[in-house]
Amino acid sequence: MPILLHDTLAGQKRELTTLEPGAVGLYACGPTVYDFAHLGHARCYVVWDVVVRHLRARGYRVKYVRNFTDVDDKIIARANQRGEDPVALAARFSDAFHQDLDALGCLRPDAEPRVSGHIPEIVELIGLLVQKGYAYAPGNGDVYFSVRKFPEYGKLSRRNLDDLLAGARVDPGEAKQDPLDFALWKGAKPGEPRWPSPWGEGRPGWHIECSAMTRKHLGDRFDLHTGGKDLVFPHHTNEIAQSVCACGDGLHADQYARHWMHNGFVEIDDEKMSKSLGNFFTVRQVLERYDAEGLRLFLLGTHYRRDFNFSDQVLGEAELRLGYLYETLEKADRLAAGTAPAAGDTLLERCRAALDDDFNTPQVLGLLAEAFTAANTLCDLKGKKTPEQRAALAAFAAAARTVGETLGLLGRTPGAALLALRTRAAARRGIDGVVVEARLAERAAARKARDFARSDAIRDELLAGGVAIMDGPEGTTWKVAG
Image (tube, rainbow, N blue to C red; front, side, top):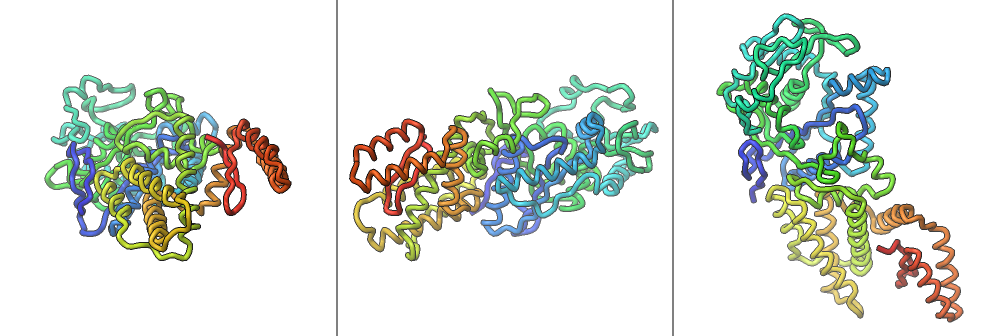
């Protein structure tokens, strides 16, 4: 079955076609590392993580490249503010980014190029553009790309040059021939990192960095370029122009990346979450209070192209759903222990078909919800399970975990996951687990003494304090009541 994706360049769904059969070269625009990753970053890279996982599950050999922008105006400004070396500051926040995405269960890319490690490739690419007449050096140390020399400029963002010209400006000190032109190389300024080049010491512009890194790690042409929708213009628009002009022969926008995918925003009060607006929560701030897998489930609950609002309430609801999934898996594992899965379960095929259609994770979660409801109902049926029922539960658990692996979910043992979820929820509600265990011991003693009135009173007191208790064949357990 073909994989369909919404291609930003085409403006519609297209079948994924690759330069080499069975292989995908994928480049995800990585973070500009001058601060800790926020939930917008988490949403972006969890989405591309699922894309990579699904492509591999479908048999593709994926080369996943995600860069670090460690040379940039924002990094320089933050480093100067703190009296720190810009490259050192970027390295520190790169390490923090790894820690956060590792916590979210994201796979490490196959290559993670950094701008600071690709200056020779950047200088070479700029030189090629100058040589071909698509870029010019006005003699002040800068080099600019001549936008009007690329006929399909703006095709990705669906903007025309007249509209762009209305909002264009030339900042003091710039020597552009046209207000639309953008910098490929910036002459050295005090307090900024600098490298040698044929045009004088300086540093690269933002857009040329990704063109040079994709070229180095994936070639002049590759299959799939991803990023947040805020990158469509100007960053990805400029990437296309400079890459096609340097390496293409027909000057067509699709001669760089064959396909483009862009994700929507995580919002606060219907406004994009961003560092510049100051309305963001970092990943580590959220993970101090909530389970990382619960956060991942929350992020996958909306289609990747749509914006959605963040709130504590919806994240708490995601944790409750995750707890239900693990509770059902625990029961299915226990009841089906030692039984071979039944043949014919279609859950895996249906979920993969949903992902084949533009990576529709909400539909997959809906299919899982239906399967978990049916499995939970089967688990709770009275009486001993038949061999057929046990085999069905075994098949369900196996398929659910395989789907979960593609989503980056359900990878823990149920016991470990439920304990972690309970600990997070108890901390948020101010519930002391030691006190709860002591009260459960009192209740067990009352039940042993057949003092059921006392046992019921303790149960009701705990429930009033936000603790629900469950008596089962393995003993009594508790969870934070929803």
